Length: 461
Image 1: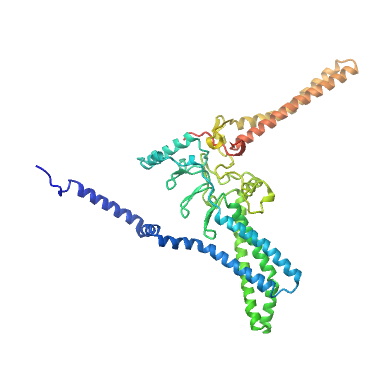
Image 2: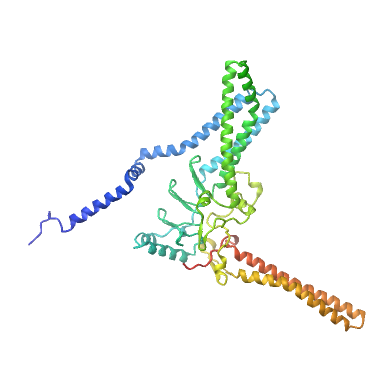
């Protein structure tokens, strides 16, 4: 008996109903919000409106700066200030600060995220295995094997000690990198997404962002202070009713300029001070409330090496370039020097660091025996004093058996030379062991022959 083509296959209605129920559940889960977002992203006209809304704060900044420039130059300098030298001085200082401010602002806006090496991106097959994994633990194990296979220099973990993986970008996140939901990509040393620059504040433009804030503070307070005397005169004219209609209308623009300058100056000063504090601790805004996780636990001071190192990591090693909006940031945004707070867990192990093709396929091996070296150093320092006392006693006993003064003099010179040689050797060994202990306490990576970042401990998760 044949079955008609129009007859439904048994179970097909149930399967169709199941699909409808799943879609209904998904819609109820995400609600109208997900539907609206999908419509916006798939509509060209809506995307144009979204992009314009994102760029509107940037246009607003340039609009305010343009009007402030007009009010300061043409109303204050050429309309109020009569003294030529004072006028030239104000115009010169304003243009220097304004050029540095706009230069750093544009650099913050248009600097792109640094290039993330291809090794951090999972191949298509591996990514499909992660997607199709039966359990989360199985997916994490696939990522863990990939990291170990390619020797990716990663220290940070999730709370369950799994490697941080971005499903949207299909990549293993480098240290201090996070996914930006607005830019739709992972950002190196992500600090925050700033709507006033329509860009993420990150590794590649953090120096420009700090200069933008700093020069903005100086520029605002310079305008406010140089315009203060005019405001005082205007207030006196208003109180005495002696000002003309034209002068009052002109002065109102200068009053508004004073208000804008003070308001933005205080706002930028607060933000600038906060980020100076973050740099001094070598933290990002995100890390200030979301502490990084390592194999040994959380550590909010993991990247706080020293005040000099923290500032040079952002602004560069040449202080002359700190105030110029040019690229001088240290490192590559992938690897960071960090305090090895968990070194005690690996005291008697060998830390093996295999540098992949990013670092010319070289291998660096460091024997991690910090505690042994430190204890040995303490013993060496103690032995220096004990050896000196024993040698002095031996010297006194030996010199008593010598008859001639010449023999005593020769023996004394030889003994002193021998003693200095022994002590110098012990001290050199102490210094070298101490340096090795400090080096092992920090994590280093030798990259292209330059030592500047962290060695990941050989952890077996």
